[in-house]
Structures are given as C-alpha cells and as structure tokens.
Image (cartoon, rainbow over all chains, first blue to last red; front, side, top):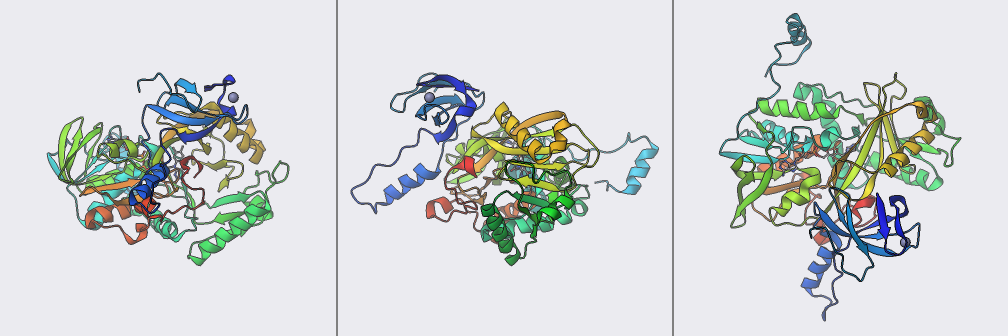
Length: 96
Length: 417
Ligand SMILES: Cc1cc2nc3c(=O)[nH]c(=O)nc-3n(C[C@H](O)[C@H](O)[C@H](O)COP(=O)(O)OP(=O)(O)OC[C@H]3O[C@@H](n4cnc5c(N)ncnc54)[C@H](O)[C@@H]3O)c2cc1C
Ligand SMILES: [Zn+2]
C-alpha cells in the first residue's frame, strides 16, 4: 500500500502509523463541567465509532518521514485511498 | 444423529464410505423461532447448542450469510489458553478450559483439543517481572501457570533459538493446560450436535435488517425474507458494527484485520505453542505438520479478508529469528480475518437497550479459545434475560460507567490490544 503524505508524496505503508478515526470530535467545554450531556459526549468521543465498511476518514502520521499528522479517506474493503490532506482541509473523493 | 465411533467407521468402511449421512440438515427457514442466532461462527453455533442442551430451547435457527465456519472460527491460529489477570476475564476463560477438556466427548466430534502447553517468552528483565506477576496472579485464581527457565524451555522446544539473537530469551511463562484445537472441527461439531437437538442451520442467508417496534425486536429481514423471533442473539464477530447499525446502535468497536500463515508440512518438530509478544510472533505445529504462525494485526480499520505484505514479512522475520531451522521451509498459504476489536480489549456478552436483542462481540484476536465459554454464557444471557455470573463484568455499558476491563492498560486504542 502506498500512502501519499501531503508534504512528502507517495511513500510505503511502513513509513506511517495509523492514528484512528478522524471524524470524532473532542467535545466543547460546557459552562458547567458537571453537565451530564458533557459526560455523554466524552463517552461517545472516547469509545463509540461508526466503523464503516467502505470509505473512512482517518488520521495517519508520517512517523518515519516528516512526522506530520494528516487525514486520509481510505476504503476499508479495497484499501484504496481517494484523498489525503492536512488536518484543516476537507477531504474529497470516494462516494462519501 | 448417527453416532461417530470406531464401530461406525468400520461399518462404513465396508461400503467404501459412500453411505455416511449428512452432518446436519439444510432446512428452509420457518416463519418464526423462539431464538434466532445471527452468525454461524464458533460463538453462534456454541450458543445454539447450549440453548438446546442447557436451557431446553430447541426452536432455534442459526442464520449465516456464507457457510458455517467460513469466518474467523476457521481462520485462526487455534491457540487455547486462559492466562488472564483480571478476575472479570480469568474465571470466564477458565470455564472455557473446563469445557474444552471434554468437548470431543460432549459433541461426539473430535475437536482434537491438544493441551500441549502455551509458553510466553520473556526477552528482558521487565518482561520477566511482568510474566512472573501474571503467573502468580493466575495461581492465586486457581489457574495453572509455571515459570520456565531457558534450559527448561530448550528441553521442551530444542529448535528454539534463545541466545544468538538481538533480544535473547530470559525465560518464559507456561500454561501447561493451554494448547490448540482443530478450529473447523469445533464449528462442525457444534453445528452437528445443535442440529441433532432440533436447531435449524440456515446458510447462505444474510441478515439485512432488524424489525424493531416499540423498543422490542420482532425478527430479522434476510435475503430469504423476514424471519420472526421472540429473541435475537447476534454473534457476527468482525461485522458487529455493521449488524448493530441495523438496530441503530454504535458500538465501542473497530474492525481490524489479522493475518496468519502456514509453512509446508514437515515431520513433528514442535510439540508446544511458543509465543513472543516482544518479537510479535506465535507459532505451533498442526497435526498435518504445517507450522502455523501469526503476529500483529495490520493496525488500520479493515473489512478486507486479506492483508498487507509488510506484516507478513515482519512475522516471518520474527519466526526465523526464533526458529532459524524453519527459515528453510516454504510458506504455503497466508490469509486474513476481520476482527471486532473492542475499546478495552475485552469482549461484550450482554443484553442491549433493545428488548430481546442480545450482543456477543468484541473478541479481538482471542475469541477462538473462548468459543465454549462464550456460547455457554451467551445462551444463559438469552435464555434467562440476564448476564451469566462468569460474564457479569463483560457488560455493554461498562465504557459509559467507567468499568472497563483493560488487561493491558492501553486505553481506548483498539489496534493496540
Ligand atoms: C488470523 C487469525 C488468528 C486468530 N488466532 C486466534 C488464536 O490463536 N486463538 C484465539 O483464541 N483466537 C484467535 N483468533 C480470533 C478468533 O478466531 C475470533 O475471535 C473468533 O473466531 C470470533 O468468533 P466466531 O467464531 O463466532 O466468528 P466468525 O467465525 O467470524 O463468525 C461470525 C459469522 O457471522 C457471519 N455474519 C456476518 N454478518 C452477517 C449477517 N449480516 N448475516 C448473517 N451472518 C453474518 C459471518 O459470515 C461469520 O461466519 C484469530 C483470528 C484470526 C483472524
Ligand atoms: Zn511526510
């Protein structure tokens, strides 16, 4: 599997480490830290995943290269990668 | 059911083995069952068997999208052990060891359970301490564990390299009662024995939806139409997230890929199971003579039942370091299976927020050894509508309440368990 680091270009899988689902969002801090809704948001953020069969937006790190983190849209059935990009950009492609 | 015995073997030899009956029926699904089990892997089949045998519930169907034993139950490296430290795990897996011992007699099917011992190698001082502590914990829980010196290990596995390597072997923790079993025989044996008690095996039938009204499940939509059920138990391993999505549930699970491989068959060379967590390799020899080995998962989410080359290379490198003699052997086959990696590395056997819908999932790469205990506890959970004592800590809501069972203490990183 070749992965395209947004900064270094196509590199072999062995240079990268997988960092998990890119769609989960760290909950925003509420006015009251004892808010039960906040507990539930943290539970969902830490533990629950969509775990899709198909296109998946995920985080990778080019740890044996430039060491930067980035996002990838990869198909979990075919292992095809539709797009990669920096953390602050939207991914394109795949039928997502 | 025609009993398998040395006499039936002799009788059938007389007519050239042409008149063996089928091991189980292949009926069309009935309109309704008392219990439907989704997934004809080891856990689904064992659950159906114990529902019939221990709880007298025989109006049961096992619904499998492919063929019985086409999933992980016949893709694993067949290692059976119960070397856990947390009490919520230890007694559950130890129940499994009890059931393994008599399983062939119980099912009238030779599952070739072979308690040849499982040895975890330690390669540094910290591992020696950790393994001895694990062994002591196991013994306090009444589970067999023995510390082995390098000399003792060498005696048991003479071909093992212990010195001429980057991280020499310092010793190992052995569970003598652990070992291997023939994985597909486990699926077939449970299927045949469950069928004999009236359970319907419905193969080539995929569950595509769940009919839920007023918070209660009424049955499942399948490629063979709607099938009604008073209760539904789901044991689909690597497809747990997918199937529970049909019930509107998100799970604390990610699906990952694990590969395994075998060498060409050779004469008996290794009569125990050797594992090295540090080198990322475990290895045993099958009765056919192949060396069966595997290592780490592929680390990224995957539903493909095939893996990537770097992991194969990594596992083979480790194997050659541990057993230089095996480097001369050809690799015969490699394959992969998709696994339900839970967020704390421990399985879930429980009821769900949906009435009469039950969950059996999160087996990571250790679910084969759990097959009998999992079926035992899941059947109880379904029949009694409450968890079994032995799986009472394997609850679905433990992540929400903070009662995770994290044997390694690595947190919610499913690919690290
Ligand atoms: C390479 C590898 C090595 C392993 N090594 C070991 C080991 O040494 N020791 C150990 O203890 N464990 C090991 N495991 C883990 C173990 O194999 C699994 O945890 C265990 O088999 C999972 O339970 P199961 O047998 O019920 O799963 P499976 O056999 O996968 O059963 C699940 C079934 O559900 C079916 N299904 C899925 N979706 C649907 C649907 N929508 N409708 C109907 N049916 C559906 C699937 O087709 C499948 O047959 C290994 C796994 C792999 C892949
Ligand atoms: Zn880079």
